[in-house]
Image (tube, rainbow, N blue to C red; front, side, top):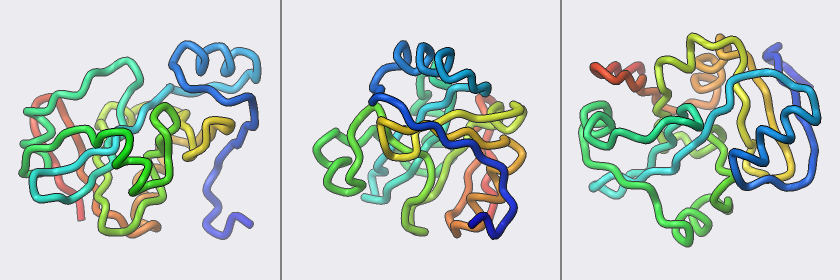
Length: 155
């Protein structure tokens, strides 16, 4: 039941773990949207973060430090699997405990639809970019907006 009237599409398919496989699956299933990736990060303080960006973008860790106020690194696969139950290549940007802030690339919010793995390599989810902030707020996570030229922190 979709109590909050949030638009989404959910596709089931063979497991995919690479961007190349994701593009092929997208073509095969016929869905549209901007491909995203989620990086599960850990700050120097021990705090975890979820960072949602374009699949084609490399993370600028100096800029991420400016955004969240501490140095962050990508969590090693074994620690990520232990903490989230997820495997690399199918990391979801959403659905973490409220203590895990979300960092969203500002340019994603300008897209029409966003495509991501919902913590399973055999499923793909599509949402409207315009709903992303509302989804994060409904989940109760703190939201940071990542911009190449500066930072925004939204409560």
